Length: 360
Ligand SMILES: NC(=O)c1ccc[n+]([C@@H]2O[C@H](COP(=O)([O-])OP(=O)(O)OC[C@H]3O[C@@H](n4cnc5c(N)ncnc54)[C@H](O)[C@@H]3O)[C@@H](O)[C@H]2O)c1
Image 1 (tube, rainbow, N blue to C red):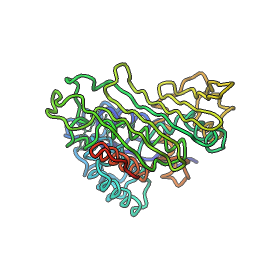
Image 2: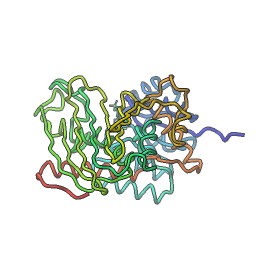
Image 3: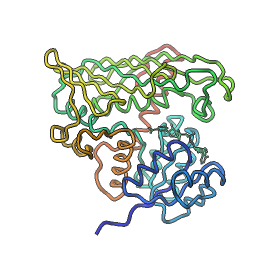
């Protein structure tokens, strides 16, 4: 007989609360309730995510014994304090990226989670596209060969005009880094996940296009960042991250070049992996029976029925809940990965400020 569904609760009632709630349901969990920044917003959020229970505040949510896993989906600067409380209440935690706005706070959360002995995951969900797993398996099996170079980008345009604004623009709510912490963190996680190599040093240039934005007022967070880096294996890496690239919506692209072949994954075309060769380049489609086992595991619909971002989120939630039940989850992004992203983000800002190469 299958065990009772896990009970999950959401802190935050915005865009990601909806994504998390759909993923949690599809992964077999029961949504116990939600809380947001005020009791009224909590009620609105409960209606939006389709749950009866709006907790008036975080204390009420954490006091409910039916809640096994707390999902923190609030503005970045609140992650540390909320997650400290959830861990102290003995809950398993999914905390959104960036895990914290400083390395010190991210390390603190990782240590508290380890001491609590709970599952503590960060939704670096692009890891859960089957074709990303396929790329990772090809690198690991030696099919790509020694890595020479990596090119990556994460480009958006939703902050293109000075009138565009959001809490992410504010240092107080979003943290010292904006574009890089927000989306560069996904890109670097994906790069290290697929290549199995770590960035060991980097140099960065950042640019702020507007000194003021509509409601934030004076701005000090970057709109874009360019990064030159090197991996432990010697691969040369170039990355561009921007929230002011006209026409680009969620242009996350990772291309790796090895001695034998190249691989290219584009988040907006997640059913494909381009395999480049001097002769015989091909576009590999998600044909489940042609994939490496870890990619085939996540290929939950027959080819031709496209899987996308929400499906990747569901796979992340399913693996998180499996880990809560004691299963080993291959490639689950955990708080240590959140710390890693925070370290790279701080190095990017430090290099941009000093002009120096920074060792990681
Ligand atoms: N993993 C991903 O793919 C992904 C994608 C988008 C956003 N995110 C992350 O998710 C988080 C939330 O982003 P979003 O786009 O949903 O933002 P949002 O602005 O749409 O929603 C934030 C919500 O948090 C609530 N809130 C604010 N302070 C709170 C507090 N102290 N207690 C409880 N609720 C509070 C707000 O009322 C709002 O409902 C961010 O950290 C962001 O970086 C992750």
